[in-house]
Image 1: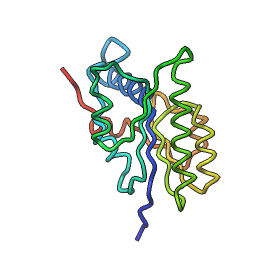
Image 2: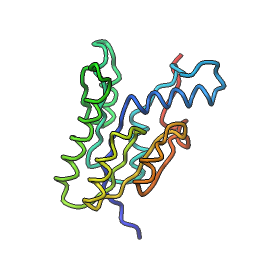
Image 3: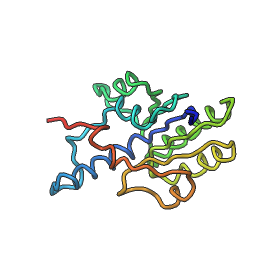
Length: 174
């Protein structure tokens, strides 16, 4: 019988949202690059990515939304630890650094190796993957096929495509 390991889920929100909207537009043969009617279902995403593993922590980091936006509250209600930052002149760099710092705290404090499930295509996460690997953690990279970084893919134990669970992790708004 296989032992179900614990996992840490780390979501680069902007990366997943943009790539999901591009994937949706292509899937629906739309004439524009992004399908803004597609929305992530955070509870479904968390459930699908956990894939039976006990979740130690689920971290979602992104740029601060407008005051009337309900996106982050939905993510919190679905079980994510949400961290937002004002978008600076260098774009999402602070967001990615905060993601890495938050994940490293979990990895270094956790009593035994688990599975890091990273949802991003951003090369900024290479040091995190290396650190998790050095701590004997397994590493999974989740992303859309249109954005998987070869550099990241070569560093992890498994690459899983969000393409394959697209209809489960999102829905369309009218």
